[in-house]
Image 1 (spheres, rainbow, N blue to C red):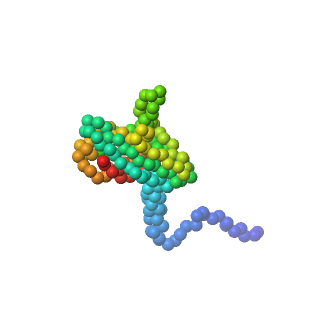
Image 2: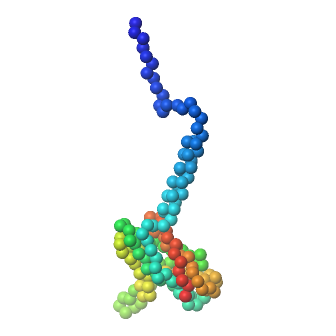
Image 3: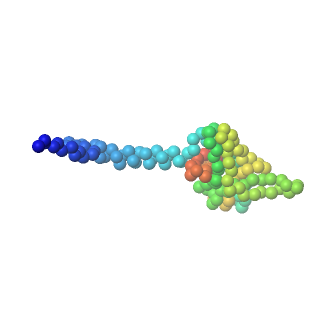
Length: 162
């Protein structure tokens, strides 16, 4: 009778040494990946905000924000809103003239084409700061405005207060 050989193996092979580093490495790698993913979602690549300003007229009137949003990336972005600490709400609007009548309409979203830009300027797209706080009205300097995109990313830029 021939001897049979036991070919049963366990996978993965078990280690006989005590190495605590690999056990700690797993959670550390997960934490680093999550932090990196969160940071990547925080700012879209290749997006710039220039000529950013908030114009404050009277305390009883909304302030208005103008800027140019440029997308140097290869994919289309869709701007879906904005926020600022010293505005109760910051809404996107578009001014138009139809049949000799000036209109201002709320805009829910605005596409920014790849390698293109969108200007927020008087008589066109703009942000309206509804119920600006006393801090915004009383100071000069910069207001951080965060622009939100439909893919969940956002970018914060300093807007000069005028």
